[in-house]
Length: 439
Ligand SMILES: Cc1ncc(COP(=O)(O)O)c(C=O)c1O
Image 1: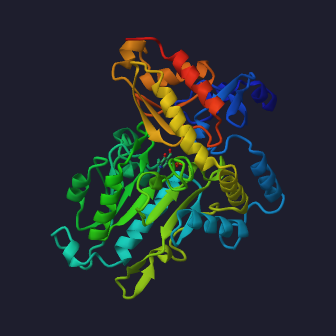
Image 2 (image 1 turned 30 degrees about the vertical axis):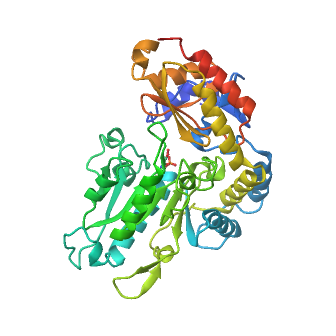
Image 3 (image 1 turned 180 degrees about the vertical axis):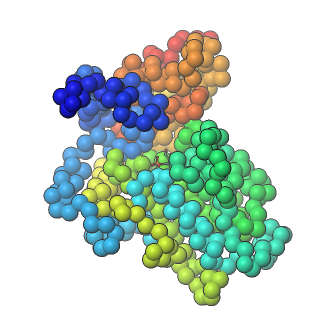
C-alpha cells in the first residue's frame, strides 16, 4: 500500500484523497528559495503570488530558518495555559508597530483573526453602553436590547468561516451555505452616505479592508477612511480594519491604512498571511481606549475579551511567534518597507508602459498590484470557457511566472517584499510577452 502510494503521481493523490474544494492550477511545487519556486520536474518559476501575500520575505529566508530551527529544538508548543516569552515579545512588537497603546490576541489564520473581531464587536455591543442620545439613528434602542450588527462592504473578503462568509461582500462565497449568520450587512465601498444610511440602533461596528484584496486590489480613498472614522465616533461604533492581506509591510508601511490615511486610528485590526512569512499565524490588535460598561464603570477595550471569553489551542506558539518576530526584524533591517514603496511605484509604471488594450487599469499600493483586464478580454484573447483572469494566469504559469487571479477580470501580483528590480523587470517582460497582441 505505502509503496503504491509512493509511486502515485501527486495530482492523483489529491484526486483520490483530498477534498476537491479548491480549483488548483496543474503545478506540483516542491521547493522554494527567495522569490523562486521549483516544481517536481525541476522547472523554475518566479513567484509573484508568494502564497497569496504570505511569503513576505520570500521562501526559506536563512535568518528565519536559523531562529525557528533553534526554537524547534527548544520549545514548540505549550497551549495558552502558560506564559511564553516569544508570544509576549511579538505582542509588544506589534503594538509598537501600530504606534498606539493596545493589546494583541493570537490565533492561526485570517478567518480566525476576523472571528476575534466579530466577537469583540458583539462583546462591546452586549456589555457596553450605547452611544449618547445626541448621536443615535433617531430610533430608540431598548435598554435590554444589545447592539450586534457589523456593517461591511461590497467586494470585501473576510474569510470562509460561517461568520466570515456572512461578513464578506461577495455572493459567490455565501451561495449554498445559507442561512447566513445574523447581524452582517453590506454597503457599497467608498460610499459614506450608504454607510450612514445603513446604521441601525443595533449596529455595533464597521469592518473594512483598507485595500480590498479579493476583487482586484481596490484601495479605500483617504476621504472615505477619515469619514468612516468620524461616523464611528459619532454613533459609538467600533472601527475594525481587516489588514490580513494589506498589512505588515505590503503597502510600504507597517499599517496598510497609513499608506492611505496616516492619521486615522482604528479600534482593532486583524492580521494573518505575511505576519510569519509562511507559518500559520493570525492576530488582532485592540486599542487601549476606555469604554463604559452597562454594569457600571469603565474598562479598556483592549481588556474587554477577558479570561474565558475567547481562545484557541495553537494561537501564538513559541515556534511561530519566534519566526514572526524574525520576519518583522528582516523587514526592518533589510529596509523592505522602502523597497515595497519604491519597487511598487517602479513596477506600476513598468506595467503601464506595456500599453496593451487588454489591460484596462493598474491599481494598488506598494507591492500589491491589481491588473484589471479589459471588459472584452475574452473575445480579444479568445479565452474560450476559461475566465479571462484564469486564462491569463495559465499563460503566465506556462511562461514560468506565478500570479494570482482576483475575480474574473483581474490578476494580482503580490511578490515578496524583498523582490528585486531585476525580478520585477523579468515579470513585466513575461507579462508583455504573454499578452496576445490585440486591438
Ligand atoms: C482580506 C482578507 N481577510 C481574510 C482572509 C482570510 O484569511 P485566511 O484564508 O487565512 O482564513 C483573507 C484571505 O485571503 C483576506 O485576503
